[in-house]
Length: 291
Image (cartoon, rainbow, N blue to C red; front, side, top):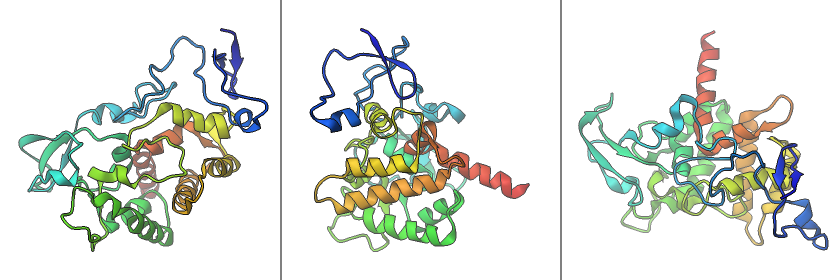
């Protein structure tokens, strides 16, 4: 196949099928991603990864601090009761016997999917439940000021607590403490998003790459102008909740990364999807305070 050039300048194979029709300009304005013809394609790029935020450039996910490897098999505390319902039936749980963490909670091993990894930073005690105060502390730790941290706490828990109660609470009444249950966090997925998380909380490499191909010209970065195009392009009919959530999420992402040149790096955005960058930012802020 004759190579064509993506926005990033990397040659990519010309597809044998037609994905762009000049008579339908939007299909030309928002091209789909094709992997570079560099001899190392990501296998089955259209298949979502359950516990790995894999892309063409990072086929093994996040290697820094052994993030991907640790999340293939990690230990978390679920309190002394080992209540499996907190994480949900879809998570593999195996007892670690008498192993306990520093708080005396018995440890178990789980394999969290990527959406759960995204939320892990805010689950400080690793019990599969995020309390409003956990969210406040998490946002404050990564650089949001007091007011924004409170707003994030209110918006997130008011929106996502009830959907995640599935398989967790015996009744249909809302959780009076507005807790978020990670075992059912996939039920908090909303419309008008990029589709990078699928409906089961897996990471879809093709959708992630499509986001940059469609709205960032195939570049390795995204500007706020690109984000506005993304929000407009992904918005679906009669979905004010999803569209609002998408706006707030991308606004928070831009605020968190706050690039000096106005360009959010693709790798940093990927790090937000699997949650690894939250730890990096929090650690950098702690170090800066000590200096």
